[in-house]
Amino acid sequence: MKASHWLAAIMCTAAATIGANADEALHINAAPTIDGVANEALWEGNDWYPMNEVIIGDTPDASDFTGKYKLRWNEGALYLLAEIRDDHLSDTYASPLERYWDDDCLEIFIDADGSGGDHFNNYNAFAYHLALDNQVADIGPSMAAENKGEAVPQLYNDHVDSAWQRQSDAPFVVHWETAIKVYADDYVHGESNTPVTLKKGMKLGFMLAYCDADGGDREHFMGSHPITPIDGDKNQGYKDASVFDVLELK
Image: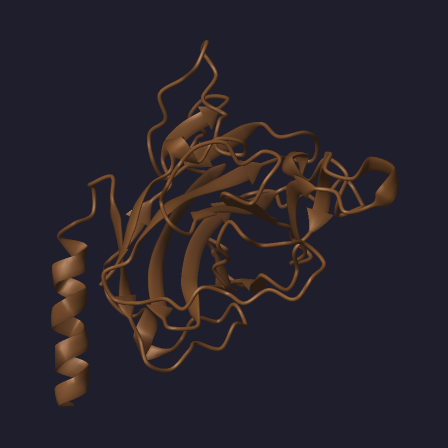
């Protein structure tokens, strides 16, 4: 009981930070089961952050899309629970590497050292696109001889464990659970890499977004943090980690 009261007190404190740009993740000892059910006590509390910043398109009607999320961590991984209301789940492109941004997907942006800057053709940061089949795509430098170093879509399924479930009654909420291994900028795709050991007080670059595609190409792209447009374009996160905000491990 004492542990439960302590956790509840910490969560109330975190809830008071909602609305600020920077996020906080609460430490947990035992990892959640990644199954899309999200019924463990570690997810309790009102420390939700909204996904209400327009990146592409206009602001969707609440009946079309709303989203919010919360964060936990331990030494081995960052854990994210997203609660999504989407009236039409769409997976138009069968290949997980073909126009994955034009399918409904959850996009997690991570910069291990919070350094910001370009990450289009390197691993200074990651922009993980979590598809409805739970495959994970991002752009990275190719290791193939014919186009070595060229930025190409690749799968990073071993970086993120992902599962979602849709509730059977209205409003048919989707709970999407993820466990994210955090990799530094010395990551080499296809080789043996050791994730970063997470520690209290670390500050990561972080952003979350959702691609909303109602049976066709992406109609809305909603994010967790405001982005200053460059030449009118807010869609910068997939290539520039400077638009991420701060995630502190509490």
